[in-house]
Length: 354
Ligand SMILES: [Zn+2]
Ligand SMILES: [Zn+2]
Image 1: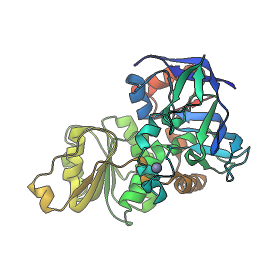
Image 2: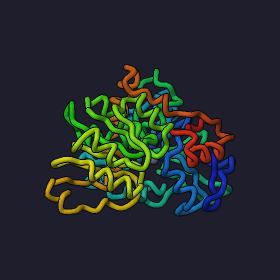
Image 3: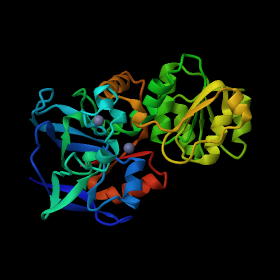
Image 4: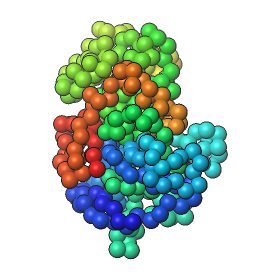
């Protein structure tokens, strides 16, 4: 079938709305009519240096199932959020850890086993990023990427649960698993950091300290549950005045200085984690004596999307996970403006509505 999609043809270039050919779903795949798709930091990185072109970016889509081939759990008409892909056959997938799938990288690059891609332009293969390619009217995805969601869910909000939101919330709730009353620092409050703030509030953390170089984002962090917000040149001293030693620190900024400050803010046996890119913070004797730890390799919050996303959407319905405060909608025709708004920090989570 013919579909419209935003196609990247050269590194750092604009996305062009083109007509592509999309093949029918194969066994175990779904044809999904995309309603909307969020822009994630990884999409911007891939736009700047794609591993291959032409490529359709987008890996935070949601939509409606139109056709299900060999997928007994799905029916046409089901509302789905799309998340990362996993093979379902490697030892990690079989053990229930799809986020650690041994071919995660290959699938993220949009290469299904066997190198097949359902997308093409005049016979030339087109890569769907994350085997999803969400900036398009339709996508053919593995059923393992799809999560059935509440039919009442607002389909302009559901997409980002599949990456940025589950990554921030999952790191707090699954990896840290804080007890009520434990303290947490979150450095960098974009979508992932703000989702971590909301999750920390749900877990009953105190204090919840948000740190960022953009003061506007800190107002948002406060409205979502941060008990303290810090910014400016003397961050370390400000944090020290709130807590002499925190239980958890999550850095989403990829900023080495902030990461170092976050490590220092931890107390005895404090646990830190960083998402995104950049190096691990260097431990000194004091950090080692305090038995601090730091995890620099958390993928997708280590969540199983099929259970975690419906849980978060339930919290959203209860008004306890107000993701609508993060989201700015753009029509597909304004996708390049949406990418600019994302990289300039004017929109926390731009969502493209097809
Ligand atoms: Zn696997
Ligand atoms: Zn992402």
